[in-house]
Image 1 (spheres, helix red, strand yellow):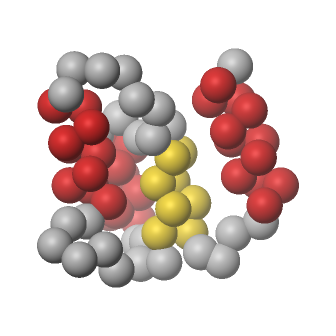
Image 2 (image 1 turned 90 degrees about the vertical axis):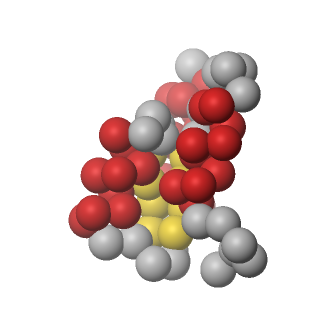
Length: 65
């Protein structure tokens, strides 16, 4: 776990800066609520660990267009 912050906290901070920052959240502690919250906050995708590298590469490519 990240010390002091969650991935959801980081999403809040990134979007509070006013700069468009695409976020793909990768979590070892994902549950359906974390997925819903992250997507509602603007994350482009949420992946649970362990993840398949091909899935991550496809989401990055799709996110960057």
